[in-house]
Length: 336
Ligand code: NDP
Image 1 (tube, rainbow, N blue to C red):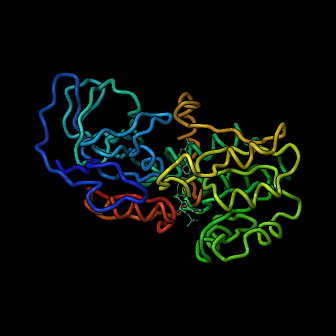
Image 2 (cartoon, protein in one colour):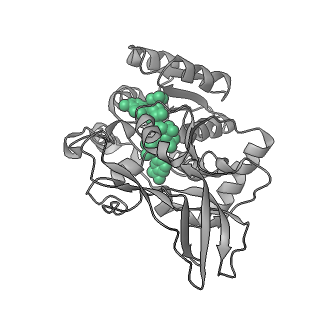
């Protein structure tokens, strides 16, 4: 069993020696357990803060432990009556090729292997997709005619936020890094506009794209995008704070200007609402997964993926994702 473990906690950007590839025999499973083989591994921004020695909404990864992560996996041995050999599941296997767990372990879901590509259950029809959908609908509460802005617009969260907001009749403006991503967001995903924050004219470009101001800002990145958005927020606006990836590699998190500083400074009218998918809407897991998977199957929900081949390439792909090298959902393909 090859796995990638946390060897030492990264200081700032991940460096050589922080993550290590290890190999161990696959252990025999006990009564009640299942053994799965990872097919697709999801790389997600939240994994970087989990490498730090600070407690967020979940515990830090222990030294020597595999990096956390969700995968699509196949049951290859079962001593549980809940699973049969051949079942396809999503589970938090971590960055490893095989994983075993009790048949009643939480956060393991069988998936319908027929209707959509399996890896979509890690992207727009998976955790990031549910995050975008729930954060927008239940926190952002968009109304027809309003202007919705979403950052990291070409990623799986942003992709679902924008297309869902279009379905609600909103004017949708994305923010993304580079001309190619912006073109994709408008031409393929159907947003009304997309601002390239790397083009050097962020404030003016965002203002031009939002002539009636901003009613909902779905926060994914923080930093200069947040500052530019804050100047354009309308009275009564909502800001679902999903994440702020621009700060995830910070050497000292206490020195980072977060969206809470920026929006919190708006006093009584502060529009922020921090949310976490896993603590708020687990009861909607199946319902929203089906809703999004059906849209993928019918071609209504468009998306893009970047695939790294082999577990050994996960660290480089992950480092790249935190700098926007991915285009759409970043996956690692492990086995067929
Ligand atoms: P993405 O696939 O969109 O990858 C991250 C993207 O962030 C990069 O592609 C890059 O896009 C952008 N980015 C990186 N650095 C910067 C920067 N300095 N300034 C602006 N943009 C930057 O990720 P996801 O769609 O998976 O996740 C999006 C957000 O959602 C993250 O913040 C994540 O932590 C959060 N999240 C929160 C959850 C919750 O429950 N609250 C659950 C799941 C995700 P570009 O090239 O366009 O800059």
